[in-house]
Image (cartoon, rainbow, N blue to C red; front, side, top):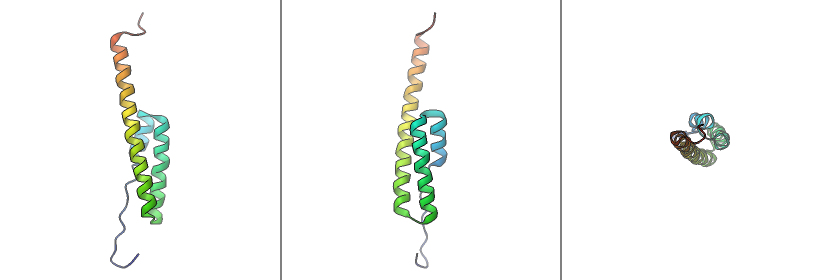
Length: 87
C-alpha cells in the first residue's frame, strides 16, 4: 500500500450472522457466520476483493435467513391463532 492511502474496512456482519443463527434460521445463519469470518480474515490480510465477496455473501444469507425466520414466525402465529392442534 502506498503512503497516504487508507485501507477501507469491509463490514463483516458477524453480529447479524450470530443473531440470524440463534433467532431466525440455523443453517443459513451458520453459513453466514462462516462468510463473516472469511470477510474478517480477508480484512485483516488486506484482501479487499475477497472481503467484499464474503461480506456480500454473508449479507445475502442474513437477509434470506431473516425473511425465512419471519415467515416461519407468522405461520406459527397464524396456526396458534386459528386453534390448530388445540383439543
